[in-house]
Picture 1 (cartoon, rainbow, N blue to C red):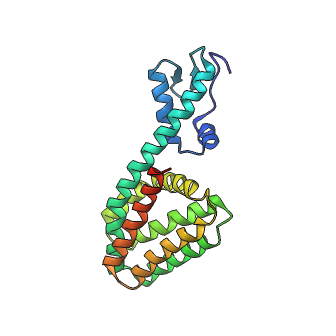
Picture 2 (cartoon, rainbow, N blue to C red):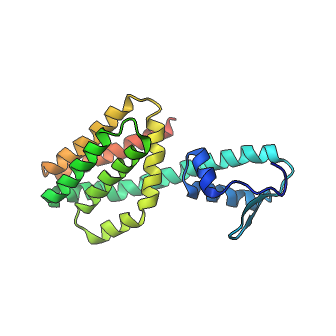
Length: 207
């Protein structure tokens, strides 16, 4: 590419780098502030710098840093919201909630070889747990963050599953959380959800 050329769309860059569109958008904004890219409202992003090869490296680095930062922020928020959700779910879940969790777990179990299907099953299970809290404000808040939740789960699963054997470990973690909720054990459900999210954060920090 050359100065004046239009960069691929946010959607395409997101797909190429395997990250959320939010990360791409933030990286492009940083390059615009540095004077390397021009973002035209509704018209895409265009190269301004003659150092096109350097721009490519900068874009990749910025996207990676932004994605990592956003994932960590979202995991911190998830720990605050979902740990309490698991505890409330263990106290309030009805049979329809438990059935929803079991369906999501079955879907997760059958999706070891289908990355996107696995992501959707993972998201579904966490949303089922939040809904089982029966706290309308908590449910509304997490549903508003659904896209960010999905982006975070996709990113963390991609990291975890560089080792294919981790599929079974991840399924087991989720099943144990469900079992604690089904057994109406709020303290255990809370502890297991906190351990699950802390484990993901630790794995990302040591990557």
